[in-house]
Length: 141
Image (tube, rainbow, N blue to C red; front, side):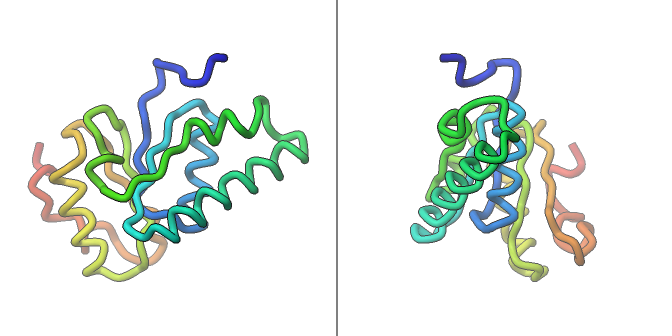
């Protein structure tokens, strides 16, 4: 079974809420491995169930080109951010609550842990990225 395309780099997602799961579905459907981080064990389990349910819904609506189990295989959940952001992630998407101090702390960790070449992105809809990521050490590289 062809489960992972080596040509597509892994994607990291920080958070395990509804939007995070939606991003995970998009990227796994495209063939990427997705590594989600959330420190909350219940949140991780809820994300696993939600992901499986949404993949099954997509399959029932005949919107998938492959089995839902294959998407689930490509998505892993991690209790430690460093595990989710190993050396080969190409992009990391942060989906934390819309609070500057939370995003500042997360982006400081992302800057420290993510590979230098990784794109750091935010799903923020209200806060300008310059408020929480403008002063990162890695932004000058």
